Image (cartoon, rainbow, N blue to C red):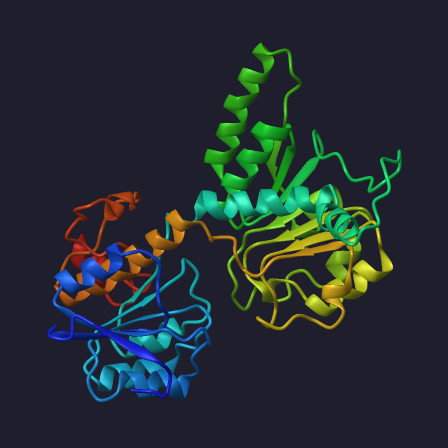
Length: 381
């Protein structure tokens, strides 16, 4: 065991499972205890490095639940395999901190926690959008500093988003949910960039337009952009919902920032390295009417020099999924992934994972991201 503080749950359990952070809720503990797991849980707030996790794995370990702040690569998966490990779950829907090829070579399935973050993260994107557009952070600091002396016609003039054009980079579950919220609530036009057309989103907007007609409201548009550059040039507000991989790292760089309108809004609730943070700082300094809202950062927990001092940027500490229901649901799914593998359960074959959050979850494994590479999908057919 490493030098970090750990506590043991169900010490008589047959399977030894390490959990690198204390997770919210109780159901995840009950699931792993019922699966006959001895749980060793780190309750340090510090992010564990490779050596600390190796020490925690030790010479015998059946499974692990890790965090997106940890580098789960070849070293850790080989260590886990050598210790008899057969299961790993990331406590996140994303897994850019995981070397999937290394996990697959070690024969270790990698779980994640989809399906419980969608609306929660989309709501945070909405919150950041309006905090930025209406200059909420600036106004609050002004008020708290005792500078408010009374109403003025030109005090903190912001941006009206109703009817403006919304650009979505990555129209998956979260991006589409955000788009629907902004279309229904604020009549925004939508242009999106994705590898594939989101016909469900386009159909939703078409159906919503039929309702708008009955209310004598003008129609809104939803279309897929021919290119990312076209989206950036067109949109009044751009929200990023893409994955992080080699093709999206610094997707928004100095050149692409220069394509955006001088008073545009940029929102990022996906992954920090999608945006070149130093380039963003420079752009915001040179374009004071340009505004950004960030939940994630390129080198968390550090921020690029000067970012925190910018009045035209709203920053929050990676809390997009931080509702109690979502974070407890993530813990439950991660536990079900590990417990399911250890107990030899089949892979869940349905898109809806909410049954796992009920009192008696299915005897199945909710989500394994390298199931295909491990040959599990072929076995299930």
